[in-house]
Image 1 (tube, one colour):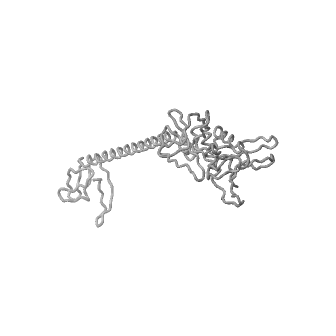
Image 2 (cartoon, rainbow, N blue to C red):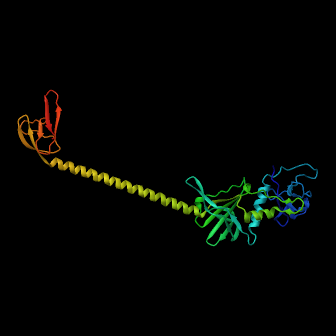
Image 3 (cartoon, rainbow, N blue to C red):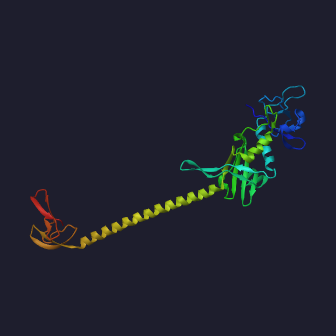
Length: 317
């Protein structure tokens, strides 16, 4: 379904007006804000009609032949231009949506919906990006971008600081704005009044593209990440320290055992001599080592079978 044009650009005043505020027909003196062709104001006198009051392009020449294809951006452009005009109204308050972020895969609200009430400036460039308006709130600013299908919001969030928020007014997600004639009462509810109400009372179609809390959360996330990395590094260092301590202890124990003397006997030549703990001791007389036993009181006895020999007993050497 084609979107009807709710606002026209009044000539020569060059001001956006609601269709209900002008004379019907070509006498409305309005042009399309998107393509600049003349507009015709269409008012319905039938209270039972579901046809909204609207502007339409005057698309016929003097011969009556159609010479123009309907402007597909006229609705979006007229809404955007009227929003810009409304934002300059004195005392206007802007309702902002709540701000949330994904925390552990859950969309978690971090701020509530709030009302902005500050001085508004149109066409402000911030960080090389042109915004429709900026609301100045002392040390804090909210930049507003009005987007539609052929005018997406180009915000790069990494370019902004803790003192700036970026709010997107997404026209396709807004309620349909149109001037209507109320049945029975014949009261006209203008598109302009609906748009003013949307700005001050609704959050539908408004989205934070960047919120100052985002930097705070990023900083907290980075601090938590660094703290976790530091804790893991501390655990790694402690584990390595313990491993090194065990290794040094075992090395010292092995060195001590190698230097400890043990009384040994060679059962080949029946020689007793002083050997060392923890090493293979050879008989200094005959060179035998397989039949050398420790004979001190701390030695343990074991039995083994040696190839080509009878069963021998030996003690731990």
